[in-house]
Length: 336
Image (cartoon, rainbow, N blue to C red; front, side, top):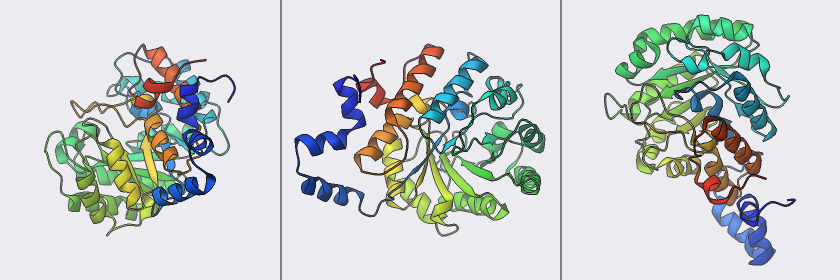
């Protein structure tokens, strides 16, 4: 642990401190068993900060800063880091350096580095820059679909079919996102059956995993439960992930509900960076640091080093001259 401040040690090794100072080993194990009963032993964290976290920032983040940021995240032990988006710079100026970023990062052998490809042109550009995994974005709302990817839901599936067919030809896995899974900023409530329909269709077309996005953060534990009950009737648990924004402060509760229902993949963003340019009022993604702190406290393994994540969050926040949105980092991180 070196010379880390006591507060940081507490954040990183809360379970060890409890065991050492308060409980016997037997009592500690009994508590762990009661907390983790029925929950996954391992949760895959998909770090979306470099793409979803930065895409909505008005001030352009320098390419070198993005590369250094991603390299720090790689050192933290994430299994998946979403790097950038191969989208037109006209629509998302922050992602204009997508090829330079993807080519510039230091890749770790056990880390996947997917990129977003909204159309066939983006797919070809991504593969040309060395992408080995891509993601596509669908929506449950016609209005959001037109604002986000400039086409109807029906038209979007035509694009997705092209992307999936070409990706399969070159052995590039495709992940699917479903936006507005718990409500739309333009159309309001979205029924779980609609989300289940879109999710099933993407999965049947060849997406290996479907991430259900609470795009404007309106979901609650109750609506997450109803959503997953509907979607799990159409596709397997292992192929589902949750992507929660924390607009109303409900993200951790929603994630916990998903874990209790057997979901073991969670999207999050270091320092709570993010927001959607097409969902007015939606604040950032759930903070990776806060998710890790919760999972660590429940005895659930992620393989991710919380302190290194806080360091990466501090780095990118300093570069953008902003304060972290992570409650955990605000409470206990002191840069060395």
